[in-house]
Image (cartoon, rainbow, N blue to C red; front, side):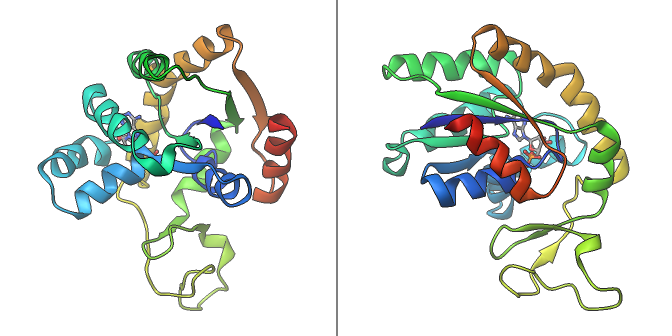
Length: 214
Ligand code: AMP
């Protein structure tokens, strides 16, 4: 299965990609995670990308397209992948299309997770991510006054992303409307798009995705 999970920041793409990966076996590929890893490794690419990311802007197309080409050509992607956060611009969509066509492949489906803007801001402002296991949780999930340990792996490796600050979030949402929304229209034209209501528990949203994929 080759799937694109589409949606604004905070829609739950990462959470749902992990669920699909666990249940259906296709590998999650998150361009945001690849860029954050490059940043943590201190590579030139990672350090350059951080400037764009921390300001809430998109990293240049050629950088992310290169990352996706490398990652999807590895052996563990042979049985499929879930793209989480890619493509985010029309040129990225075109590059992906050409890349897959070149291998005689195509996307099976694009699932758009739809969440109102008012809820996105609230979700992102209180978001905690785990460096150890990649789980994502929210401020409201913790008991008041209790130490914040990861609710999945119990380590104290939680952190708040540098771009989960109100000014960066506002810019990310603007960037989504200006540069990424046209990607959805294009996939709709191509007959690949399914829209999913992204409001509700992760399990409820996952059930809706499974319905579409079945
Ligand atoms: P995410 O983890 O998907 O929220 O991505 C975090 C940040 O990484 C984004 O705000 C962008 O700065 C950058 N990024 C991730 N994916 C892409 C992409 N496909 N194109 C350009 N920039 C990206």
